[in-house]
Image 1: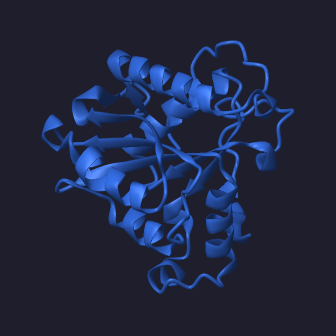
Image 2: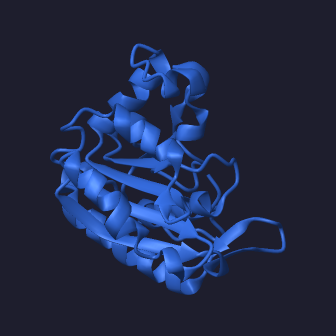
Length: 215
């Protein structure tokens, strides 16, 4: 697949070494057009919580899909075909998107339009979002969740929305989630664990000193 589009994230953030990408029940879908973003940091923090529960994950960064193929719905493109296959193979899909003008990213909209009508049937979805203020808090419930339900998703993990003030840069210039958001992510990861059969889990890893949070 072009450029290793669907790949493991940093090994200290994701799955235990014994697990392979194809064994990962959780797909992390990054929908920000930016390389470094608050929504990416939020998704990275969620991945860290899942990882410590022993859940393997794969990462799909929509910004790395070929733009022309994505916009023209070219499902014969190997990268697009691989991305759709990754969604089909996942048991849980974790979506992270920035909120612009009370709506999820156009990049996510274009990708979701490529999924078949039953593309999320039988899957659990966990929605994560970031926005400039709490005024966009309901964008997940009233904007994104109806679309995911129309694609067949019936099992939803409690969504997490974070404002800019809740994800700030540290001294090294990396985005870090606040304690309240971290607690909500931990609760969400526990809900994901309840929906993944035991054979698909690995032994939880010991806590890490300083996980990276940027996808």
